[in-house]
Amino acid sequence: MNSEIRGILAIWYRELKVFQREKSRLVGAIVTPVLWLLIFGGGLGSAISITGLNYQAFIFPGILAQSVLFSSIFFGIYIVWDKKIDFLKEVLVSPVSRTSIFLGKVIGGATDSMIQCAILLVIGWIFGAFNIIPGLHLTIFSFIFSLVAIAFMTTSLVSIGLIIGSQMESFEGFQLVSSFLLFPLFFLSGALFPINRLPAWIAPFTFINPITYGVDALRHIILGVSQYGLLADFSVIIGLAVATIIAGTFAFEKMKL
Amino acid sequence: MPIIEIKNLTKKYRDITAVDQLNLQIEEGEIFGLLGPNGAGKTTTLMMLTTLIKPSSGTAKVNGFDIVKNPDKVRSSIGMVFQDPSSDDTLTGYENLKLHGMLYNIPPVEREKRIKEVLELVELTGRKNELVKNYSGGMRRRLELGRGLMHYPKVLFLDEPTLGLDPQTRDHLWRYIEDLARRMHISVIITTHYMEEADMLCDRVAIIDSGKIVALDAPSKLKEIIGGDVVTIKIKEPKIDLIKQLPYISKVDVKDGIVSLTVANASEHLAEILQTIGQVDSVEVRQPTLSDVFLHYTGREIREDSAEGGWADRVINFRSKH
Image 1: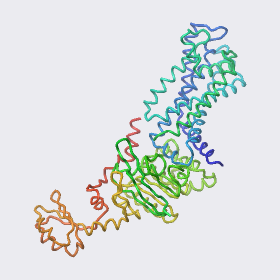
Image 2: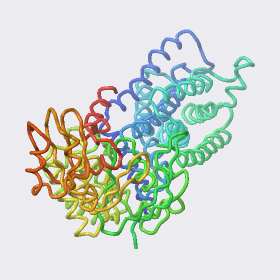
Image 3: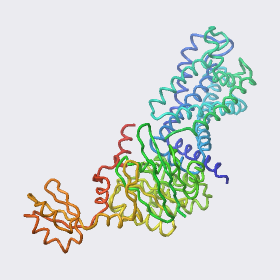
Image 4: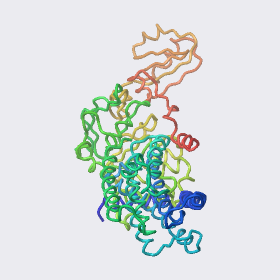
């Protein structure tokens, strides 16, 4: 087998093992979005209405995107951890190129995120089927198609997390930088509110936020409502994935120990 | 042909020159020691030779490949055991080795064979399925040493390999490293500040201080430089002037009521020395060690207990902080 491919598989293998061992990561990644959906969605939903949709059903794609956003970016913190325990040196001193190390990490982080989202989609299906969230009808088609969109989103976001992590030496630094990034991306994405009636000063920020298009794609796939259309949505999320992978390989080449 | 050729290798960090115009050749199959105090530039040199950091100027060839122009080829030729723990403690011992085998592109069947071989070698077969978290510092060190050998490197770099290990494990490791270098014709580059380790293990030793090589030779040759045996005398009122007149004494040091003499053929002259020097409390005669050599060249003692914050201690400190 090609040595670079085996190198990528090696990194992936390790990330999967760690994910499998650290169950708390998965529990946190499932419980938090469900609480948002039920409590935040239930609470706010009783006060506002969105044309033709139950509010909880409306934010379900947004909550999925939130889960992808947070868990993917935070995956970058594990590279800081690898630096601290010197595990990164063991990997960097091997013949595998830094590009492959980066790709292995991206696939590892993306896998974690996709597993979490698959579980959330099943939970969403249960909520819909038992009328806990009326109007949320998930099908096999929307399940698979959502995961395709999520795959591109998580690839970009894990890459961004790894880029930040590769340049950071402390957990605190990583958290500071990532929270400056995470909350604007999340709140300006239309995850929690419709973006067609925003005040004029917020609208441009929403427009340039790539997460907006991820949320829009998921909303189209799951609920059939969309602002920009699937073509525009997928162009943005695929374009972002390509750009961030290129940037990430560059960041790993430049990474200092 | 030398397996490692270092030419004017230099690493500067702002105002500090960690490694200063280093020139050195290491032969194939040799066990070579870099001996020096903390901050002498040993680890920095190793990091450059293993392509983990880039030199500020100068270069080196490892196994014929340039560390600046051909780092990938260099990395395929070497194994490295780091001073700090570098295994993943959420994985088992076996999983760490499997990961390593994959990183070095060893095909699965061969990989399993070598994992078995390595586990036996470092005596961890019985605990291979336990998480590294539950290993002792020594076990983890052994695992990482075995891991460094698993891909049959041409050159093995060991950064303070026995730091924090108990004497028994240390002896065991030394014999093992020696056997390996001889049998498989692996060149071993080892950094250490244990004099005994350098003396027992290394064919040649470079004493490195402030980024420069101050002495380079076989341990026995280095000790010959001292020019005789070391006689240490505990005495309250030494007659130093008389002692200095004895022709066979080449060096006299007085410190805190202890007189250190370098004496050619001490057993022959000891009686005369003791008569001359005065009322002696105690006396010790010994062969020179590398510590004496180190003192001779750098004017300082190397303190074996002041390791760069013990390997295992740092894991514990780190764990308790996070």
